[in-house]
Image (tube, rainbow, N blue to C red):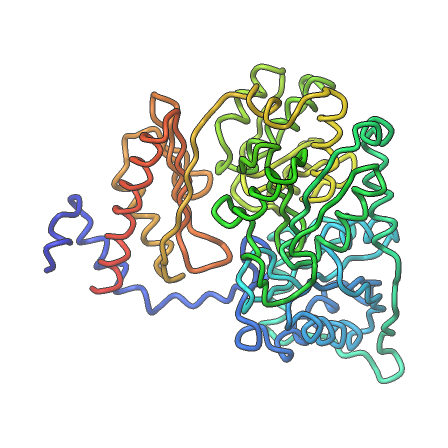
Length: 483
């Protein structure tokens, strides 16, 4: 027995033995993760796979009318063509909208009354990845129950093949971005924003956000300076996921240019991270809290939907302004479907996703940017001032590598170790402490990693929690890997 295993809590050795003995018997076939299907392009997500999943989707939809779009990744046009081939082989009529942000194709589904859509994107994942999101006729990605139906069709090879004279037609559907921008403008005071002549630095991250945000902002009277605006599937400017540590250049440019704010989008532009006029970068739950406060001032008593990964700030704001927080598992699909179920008009995530249902109940980076500018215009306050008015917490995030097959047993062991503490098991384990600090430990649904979200009133407390619980999880990974 290893020395590390001897140091584990009582009963852990027996649990590890059961895990090791049963590890080879698990053989579940699951394609969809937290947010669509993800994998290495041309390794897991091959044209053959994409065509077959397109056929499974088409079989599930029974000859519907579908949109297909894709992001700026190198492999995306190839995979989109394969998806279209699979869909049309089942008899679906497919409208190719080309390169587009995910929120734009979601808006187009409802606007054009389609039966659904497929978006080829890996969102924030590294350049070598790609993914497939399946969108229903309400513009929201498929629920888990409906994903299982598609997976079963795929795994059981029950894909329908239309007769030679009944295969679907592939058509083009232009100008969906114009319609999308017009839809956003209906929910803000364009005149008020035009009067302010805000200067905005837009970092689209060499991705499809550059197809919408700069044009939208100019149309509502902003001076726009762009960076990383050329679409390049290698993402040379920064990583596809906008995080404080990757936005140093945007922060510097905002300060030097004396701009009013900066905004950075992820790979498919459904998320946005903001930089104030001083160059400070904020996590998404802080700017979501600002939108939440403005929304509840006009709509007291409304429900606010957010995952357990969000800051306690969201509850503080709701309590002060008469809102009701509905906590969910992590995942934009879960937030969107929960909003639909409880008839909520606003949802948000710590990663920069804001769901504004009067426009559409899905994450939308351009809509979020417009809402922030609308608040600044109506209050006449700088972004730093508005955010300083909110309760202050320190948040740190990190991750460790963890093989997918170890995610469940590690979660089970962690749960055993923290028994008796104040724990929320809505998603992973979130431990709360009397000083309003917390640590969330949860397995990623899209990557072989465990994620950590630590929060506290001081940086020292936040760092302490992150260090302590990362070490616990690392030890469990080592033991399960080596024994």
